[in-house]
Image: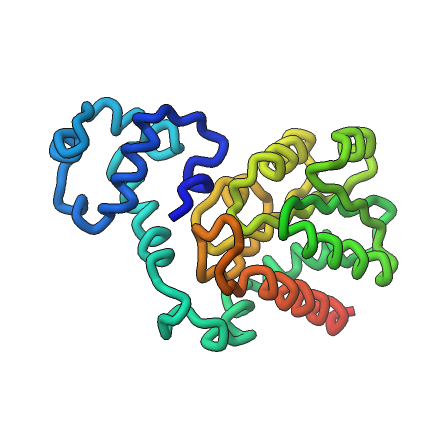
Length: 248
């Protein structure tokens, strides 16, 4: 199990990494254990466990446990599980959680014609999705700028006054480069939209609008397993465009 995304952006010590590894691998057993008992099991101090919780952004160990529990349990499902196969996910599953307000906000900022630009940013596999969104907006006559981790920061910073909205795509919602871009946009008071997996993550909390996308492999950082996240982004994007065109 890849723990990189859980600790993304946090400089953990070797001890903290070992504590996190133990928590994830024994997520069920530690439910009845207190911090002191866990500390004894791994030959560390309760203070070290609490320090790890705070460093990961949680209020304490209990908060960390209940936040990690659904992620870990979901990741433990195998691709062959009836709850975790691609064909068990329908189009309606991908869009049913969207509210009318969220649809309206997205469409107003992304599809509505404007003299200002939509700035689109992503890295890795998500860059493929961002390129599609960028080209789709261009053929629709919407002004857009596309950038990724390999592009100069000037592409963004030199166009701040001309950007109406920043749209980022990130499966984990924790990729440091993408998070920092979202943070800079928020600090510049630019409207931000994040398309991330449907679990708690930093980008979802930071963005003005987060569209949670179904992800059956939340800890598959390398995208090695069959996953609906990336095709689901395409479906949700086209659904939102359909809603926009029906309205106008």
